[in-house]
Image (cartoon, rainbow, N blue to C red; front, side, top):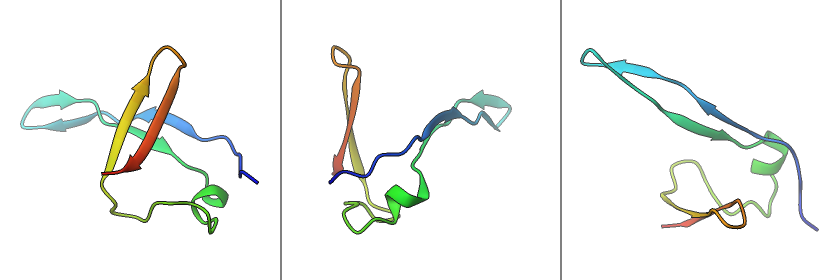
Length: 62
């Protein structure tokens, strides 16, 4: 059975060397990330794939 919860997509702008850059983050709820079925660990490199037609984002280990 899949675990389902609401996360959030946020922008945390940062300033480096006098220039402003956008940093985007996707927050995954704790109950999802700590579930034994969650496939990622902190520090894993991920491949991000966007399917704009279906409005879906897919994450997989790089």
